Amino acid sequence: MGFIVLLVFIIVPIIEISVFIQVGDWIGLWPTISIVILTAIAGTALLRQQGLSTLMRAQQSMNEGRMPTSELFDGACLLIAGALLLTPGFVTDTIGFLLFLPPFRAFLRSKAGSIIKNSRNIHIVGGDMDPRHPEGNSPPHKSENSTVIDADFEEVDPNPDSPWSDKKD
Image (tube, rainbow, N blue to C red):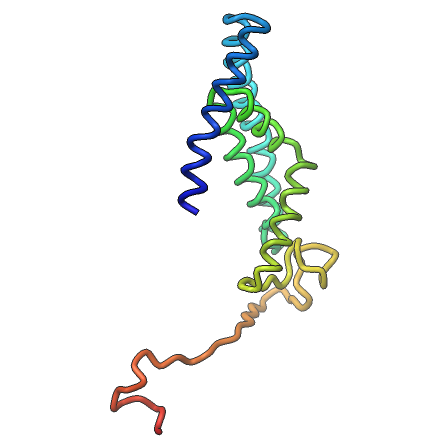
């Protein structure tokens, strides 16, 4: 994983520099710099508008007693989009603007849900990604004053050779 991050930090600037040179050669230096500054300003405005909208949707979900999973995912995408748009470059700006599009975030959310489900390390019950509850985040049984915690556990003895251990040979 560390190697992939290192490659990204090497390859992305090389791509950005080459695109800067191509665009600068095509439209000139000052228009290129102007476009980079305008994308940062537009990204900030979009982040403010969509971020507040996502926050309000998350609060509404929590007020309805639902876990705001899709809103949290959208918030993370918007945070990444804002960082990419503030980073100078046309490739990062393109990815950042894509992350501002709700259909693109929905596509990423479905792919992330599939990856999580297939990893077999995390089991999702309820929520947007649970196929058993197509109506959304609402749990199957919920009354106003009930708290239901459903869990599986396995008792693990940290020191099985201890004389105080419950396990006998």
